[in-house]
Image 1 (cartoon, helix red, strand yellow):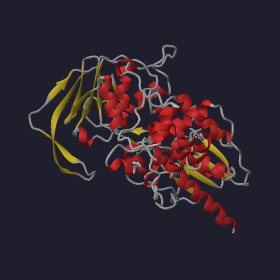
Image 2 (cartoon, one colour):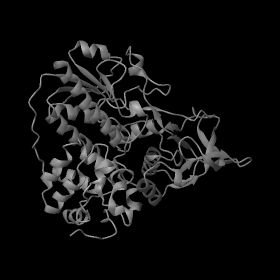
Image 3 (cartoon, one colour):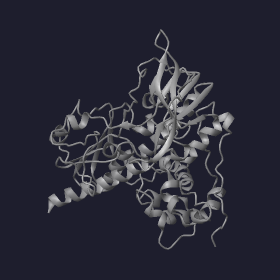
Image 4 (cartoon, helix red, strand yellow):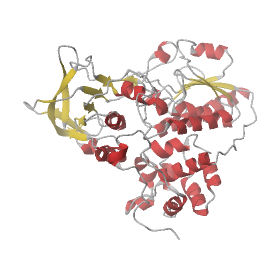
Length: 464
């Protein structure tokens, strides 16, 4: 019989007043006893509604049932049938709006902690130093993947399991994309990302770093080198700015740059000589997960005060509720219904203040959220020495500008067929943030998996 406890088994965490001074992982993970207790809450519903909420269609009740039995190897095998990055997904996917939102237990009580259980299974697998990857028989076909973020890695892993010779081309010096440069260590330890990538390499995936496609090689040259299909999973790494006065002052960062210096360039470690401003009074503009990551990272770098400045109410914030809760517990101040209009600098070009206005909400706009408008005469100035802009990113235009026949829309997103993810250029597919703009890790992974199936179907059709 299922355990009908109304609450999820609590996840052990570092104390907020300890963790806000270090970059160690906040959530400590379940023990086996905790995982079995939480898994026992699953009703194993007949129609498996949770699976429909998962962009990569993990067979959730099946792997949870194996946890109850204590067969963690089988649980891992079930997860990795469709997911190439389970330890990552268990940590950073917004389960509350995807699989867990469909959980029947969530109608009257708390849903089953699906993400926590996925993380537990993946971590257990890693702890066993298991080397059970079976490299498939080659099918004689080659495919190229541009970008080694979650979408590219998923596409590569899916194709490799089908026997393709897959090469991933990554612009940075290390694979992982946004998983490495965008998400802080305290949410997603980088050793875990690299361990997941090693699993893909064991399948035969070849990863070439420091390869800027569009500069070093073009997509057309990849075809000349014998690749029969190309998947573009280059993400959305071009930061948006507000276009207000003062954005060029010393102490103003895009969240993208700020987090890259911390995560990829290890600015938080004393032994790394990474140039970064370590401010004392910080304003982070935005209300998404990236804004939370930037704010919490600023605290850990030694900031005395950090404020989230967001033009709507907390109810409209796109960040995960868990990230908002963690940020508050760690001491981040939330200044909602406020919007910056000017960054103020001193005579030397350093940030000394942020001028804002108070906002009020009107009827919903195109995003479905209530439209904010400024209150007349409500201007005020925040005393800050750094401003981090976290209002979203757009795709880098390099790929579509250097690839004849590859169309993009006015926002710079590559145009694809919704069903197959085929682009307007023959044998080129694209997905993830390069197509949608900034979205979630798991949605990017779903696109990578879909594109891999389309590539396989395309190549098989040419053999008929």
